[in-house]
Amino acid sequence: MTNIRILWVDDEIELLKPHIIFLEDKGYQVKSATNGSEALDLIDEERYDIVFLDENMPGLSGLETLSSIKSKFPSLPVIMITKSEEESIMEEAIGSKISDYLIKPVNPNQILLTIKKHLDTARIVSEKTTMGYQQAFRNIGMSLHNNMDFEEWEDVYKKLIYWEIELENSADSGMGEILNTQKEEANNLFGRFIEENYIDWLNGEENAPLMSHNAFKEKIFPQITADSTTFLIMIDNLRLDQWQILKTQIEEYFWIDKEETYLSILPTTTQYARNVFFAGLLPAEIQKLYPDLWLNDEDEGGKNLHERELIMNQMKRLGKDTRFSYNKVLNPSFGRKVVGDISNQMNNAFNVIVYNFIDMLSHARTDTDVIKELAEDESAYRSLTLSWFEHSPLKDALKEIAAKGGKVIITTDHGSIKVKEASKVIGDKSVNTNLRYKQGKNLSFEEDDVFAIHQPEKAYLPKVNVSQSFIFTKGDRFFAYPNNYNHYVNYYRNTFQHGGISMEEMIVPLVSLSPKK
Image (cartoon, rainbow, N blue to C red):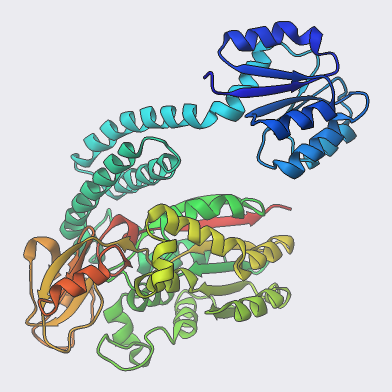
């Protein structure tokens, strides 16, 4: 405590002697000045952790002194102390970036609380966060070994995300490591949960969660009405933790009406999960009903080129042949064009905007050394997502939609996971290249590492040949071939991948928003 230095500036400093003695008894070092010029000289000569500054002083005023302090030391906390409660003075002080203000007369406990608020907050929050997670760790641990349903798994995942974000700023790095270990355990058990229930859910099991193929029908379609405009914004590869980071930005313009999740189908890739979401049909059903709109892994060509048609066909099947617009944003220039067209889109009852940035970021992190350094861990990956959003046309589009009174639904098709452990697989040249799932014939693999579906038709997956299987990695594993194994493993370890089974890939956000008018 004794290393914290306080500068108190007041032309009546003698009257504040009891306050200064009180702080010194608490272990703080307090230096005083009777005017602004003396204060600026002292700040030039030595370092201070916080400044208490009287607003009304002869000579250099408090506001003038504040301006000079901030021009040289912008991060130095300055607490303005004033007799006046005039709004104009407060606004000017706040505009000059005071950290806080107190109204005279002040008492010693007010001063002490202010110091703790601005200098000791990080330590106090860190300690409280650590204690909070220690309690949560036990509760989550007990939940993991219960026979949980999907809603309970959703709750566990949300708690893990909450504590992961809370612990980011904690001084106790050991607690972060404990949380990572608990999340790994949770993901391994989640993989077992999916393996035991997935096929039954797809085949009409009564307690099945909301999934990719029925999310549009259940959650999007009912919000499309003739007397309003609804925008469905699908941000490809948006994880639930990334949504939590973007949420505070979006809440500037929208009320959150409902914050839900749904379960992405397998494979958790754009080709499968997004087509299924827009079609309202599972992969084998799309292939059967609309063979011209579906391509299998081994087929040449883009796998997501018919999303508009899939949406249109689903809406017709649901009995609503509503006019809608569809835009897929792959670069900032087209994103800006979409923003410019919001006024026209307000004439539609329904508009779909697909944003591919986060998926591209995920792939770039695998292939680009600079991006690997910028997003070296989960926290940095979230931070990079937030930085993108703050400067993206998507934020401008949301501001424009809110200003014009449009409703918004934000969702995604799947998430991604940072992979760490390699799992050996052997297959022929026709096997697909995805690191988290493989499909083909005569696959050889580590059985404990995967969820294998040897009869694809039971999971409504396309069946190209009689001996075809699909295999999905669980937890943070990724597939690697024996040939050139070490190079392959070192290249892909700690990259973000999708296609397999994890909470990050499968439990994804679906959020309904209404504009703040």
